[in-house]
Amino acid sequence: MDLFLAGAAGFLSAIIMTLIEYPFWRAWGIQGVSEWQVNWVMVSALSKKWKTMKNPLISWTIASHISHGVVAGIAFRLLLPFVIPFLRMANASLLLDGTIFGIALWFLFTFLLRRVYEKSGQVQITDRGLLIGLLSDASFGFFLGLFVTIF
Picture (spheres, rainbow, N blue to C red):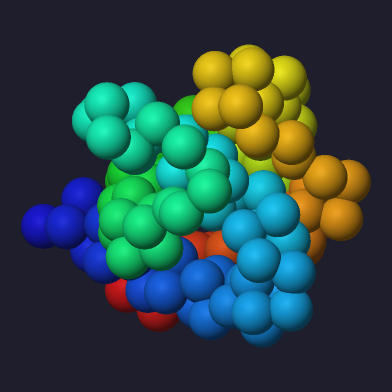
């Protein structure tokens, strides 16, 4: 049951993250949100007819985005027992821990793999999109920490 609640926390956090990203997508298109570009590259790998960034299916992109939030919520919960002893010494909160976790996800899966996604998806991830991605991943982590605390 604990992992179910962690997945629910990840789901809710991803919904909030998506709502935060939505205005940037409306303003700048998919280039305004690096995570949506990354998710579209992953989704488009599933089908030959989706191999272009010209007309990404936003519904599939968001569904992929939210499913990753569920997985990240479960991963966060599974990592807590290994991190908690260090956190008590640092006197940190789950809100801070979640925010750091969100930033780490952005760094590992968006920033470091940027060129891989650009090459395989024939897309350019802009610095603006990366910044919005960093801010939205930090918010994802903050809300993940909040929901884990509540649940």
